[in-house]
Image (cartoon, rainbow, N blue to C red; front, side):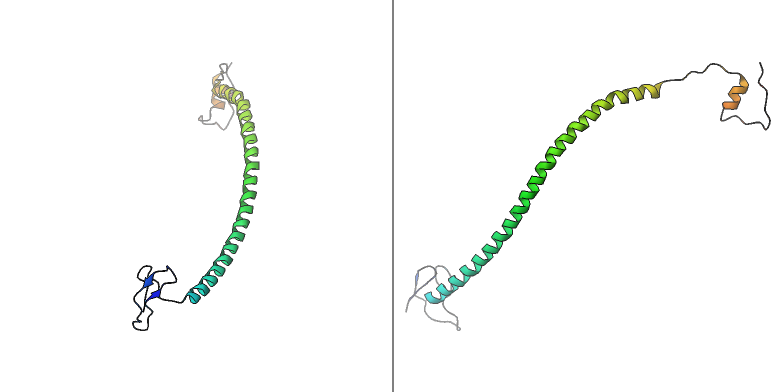
Length: 138
């Protein structure tokens, strides 16, 4: 006796159970079942999938809200960042002459007038110090 597969609608000639197993459809490979069982399975599966879809939509809504908040924060920070960049450029422009003047001062040599030997010896860090004072020669 033939049977019609409720999954794909194909008429199948295989009707015999082998080892207590229902025969499978020759086209889709699904086990033989009744249209009522398939309708019940469909209803249960659709209900379960709709509940899962609803949960996922709720989670996605929460995530979209957080994303919107983060995007707003990013926009505010980008505005602040552009202001800080402008301020940094102003500071760099102000710092250029200071840096140049500092370089001039650091490279400035200082010349002292000649001193006598006693003064030079007294100010020389490598010179040994005497335990008594030596008068400067005039």
